[in-house]
Every structure is written in C-alpha cells, then in structure tokens.
Image (cartoon, rainbow, N blue to C red; front, side):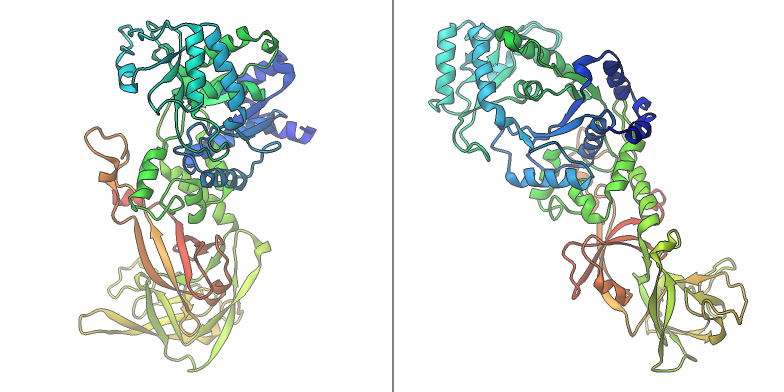
Length: 569
C-alpha cells in the first residue's frame, strides 16, 4: 500500500470495530503484520445484496490494510452446485470493482488434505463412523438445557473407523447409510459441539472433481481448515457463525496436535458482524431459488430480485452498491435496513452521471396549430446540468408533440404549474406555448390537445425575457420511437415476508410488482446499448434492458425520482 492509500484509509481504519480489531493485531505484530481475508460463497445460487455487503467489507479490508482478499468457493455439496453459479459469482465480484490474487480457490482443491486430516482425527480417537440415520442422530442431540445421548457406535475401535471411512470414500455404502462424526461432548451447552457431522456420503458428480469422491466434508469441518490452509489471518463471518467458532477452534487444535509441523502456521481469527437484512424482500438463497423455479420471476437476474445480477440489470451501479454498503456500516447486532436507503444511493449516483432524455410514458398528443405544417427543426438540450462536461445534443421539434397525460388538467387549481386551457408554459429547450383547446372521444376521454406557440420564445433566444413558471418535457410525434418500459415495484407487499410464522413468503407477493407500458422516446435512444442508464426527464431513472435492440427498445425502471412508496402504504 502506497502513502496515498494509507492516508486515504487512515480515517476508515477507525470507522468500525473490525477495523479496530485488525488495527490492534497489527500493532501487536500478529501474523507478521499480514492481513489476508477471504470471501467464501457456496456456488449454489446467485449472490444477493447481502453478499455484496460482505464482498465490499472483505475486499476493502484487504485493500485498506495492505493485504489481499481471496475468492474461495465452498463447493462441498455437488448436489446443489453448478459452474453457472461459479461464473456468475466471479462476474459479480469483478463488477463490484474488486479482484483477488491469483486464481480463484475452491474447497475441492483441499479435499485430499481434508480427508487426511479426518483420518488423523480418527487415529487420535477424535472421530468415529456412525451408522445411524440423520433423523436418529438429530433426535439424540438433546436440547440446550438437556444433555444429548451418545451414539452406540461412538466407541468403535480406531481400526474399524478407519476401515469404514475408507470404504465410505470408495463408494461401498449408500448415501445416508453412514456418516463420520467428531467425538467431542454430548453434554456441551453448545449444540454444535455435540459430536457434529464431519463427512457424509454423496453419490453425485462434482463440477470439478468428477466422480473421484463419494464422501464430502460438511461445511463446519471444511470451512475453518480452508482458512488455515490459505493462511487467512482474519475470517470475517456473519453473526450466525459465532456459535460455530468454538467448533472451528476445536478442529484446528486437534489437527495441529496430530501434526506438530503445523503449529507455527497462521491461525485465522474469526470476527463476526451483523448480516444485511432488507425490508420488503427475502435474503435466503433457498427462497430466491423458489421464486425462480416457480416462475414468479423471470430468473436470477430479474430486476425485482435482490441479486447482484438483478440489481445490475435494473440499472444499479457498482458505485451505488458500494456507497450503500458503506452507509449501512458494520454492526454487532442484526437489524433491518430500509430498502429506501439503497434506492437513495442509486438516485444520488445517477443524478451525477445519467444523461437526461425526453421520454413520455403516458402520451397524449399536443398539436401546435400555428406552427407550420411539415416544418421541423432541432433544439439544443443539455445532457446533464450536474455535469457540464457531458455537453448537449440536438433534439427534433415539430408541429405535433407528445406530452405526459398528467401534465394537463382541464379544471386545474390555481397552483397547477403545468398545462391547462388558457395557460402558458414552456416546452423544455423549445418554445413557450398556450393551450387553446382539446378534443374528447365519445366517452369523455381526452384524445388531443391544441396550443399556439410564440416563435420569439425559443429557448436560448435573447429577444424575449419573460419568466414562465411551468416547464414540461415532450417528444416530437414525427420522430418519436416506441419503447417497451417495464415499471418495477417492490416484489413483496409485506415489510417482513419471511418472518411471518403462520404464512409463507409467497403469500405476500406483490401482484403489481411489474407493469409494462409503451412509451414514446426521443430518437437518440435507438443508439443506446444494454445497461446504459438515463434519467427520463421528470419521470425517473431507467436502464436499457439486456434484451433490448435498435428494433425493439426495452427499458427497465431503476428507481423513481422520489420515493413514492410511503404514499402507497
């Protein structure tokens, strides 16, 4: 880390308790002053916003303290894992702005070593093969206030356990027929210490090791040892792993006792923090997978999903997500964050960088009766008033334009500063107009509006200096392009859909979470590329969908200009 990076991070180092603990370790020269963290996802689903917080935390810690952060896949369950998930996780981490040293790492890289350590524990009388079913083992666990019951297979001989474990590895037994358990303490007040499972039999090809293995380590056995193998100095975990920490320490202690050559290796220090919970969503990969499999959403990257890929498709930027993670901070207690904070972060980011474009999402035609028929011209319009370097563009103007239907009111109150009969306002970057009348269909619905314009009021002209309060956006009817606009809302209509005891989270699906409309947009948008972001003037922020083409424009609404959800509740 160079001097500039140290100076930039000097304040950050003191912002939360994890920084302070690492600072303390460095001051004591623990691990020789090294800092190596890791982000260890299971490749059994797509990453969500909670993982994004962990990514930002772990990779930033490596950067801020002059170290690094490993990307490691805990691929210990071949039944649920897939290369698709591995690839998506890599893409998400890099999209968020982070990278890892060397190649990504996998738990499967260490299967031989983990197996050897399991055998070492058996030899030292610290592990045994159990023939009981998962249900029986669970029933013998007891409760936090009552001791568990020892397995009748707990005192098998070392020789028999080694033989059975090897035969398990060789595929001689069916899945569920036997397991390997640690021999710890069936009376421990910590339920995780009551002879936990270390290995189970799975007859399924692994995405990296094929059919080499018929036994796979449990997460609790593999996780801490993977950190140990990689030399992780600080294992940053969410709070649910706090009660697992004594077990991780126990495993490492037994392994080091079995092999004295390991005693000088770095032992990872586990520090727990509160996981991210958002209202109006779920953060369980199992529940998210259910949404996908039951076609409630279109896929893992559906813009209503809290997945990183869904947020990206919806138009969120990596900067906005990193800002969100920073604002949420690192806490010791679980809490629920209002999703409005995430939305405010993307508004703040896009306000600075997204070009303002003219798009009418609920169009009504306005005919300027005194503008010459067949005439067209181009007006200059600023791309983003927040950033002059973005320049301006030419926008076509003609006799007939589309405006938003709710920008007109027939019987308008005095403080209505948009269009009504007899009132003057300005078409943004063009002319001042005065509404002269309207046309209705047989049901009383307004079909067209009529107005006159003052040719002396062209935007930027100096011949007329007249203050006009109302300004609305528009699109030339002769040049307008149809676009499919997908307006997204909360996927759930309950603040805590996964926390209701007598209901399923699917009971709270918001049936109006997606509305598709046809908008009229300015012709420059035919050149937009997937994931390009724009502000539709006075409407909201929108992103070009990945399936959009020049022949069929598709826009996803990222977020409205203001939070309108509170008004709906």
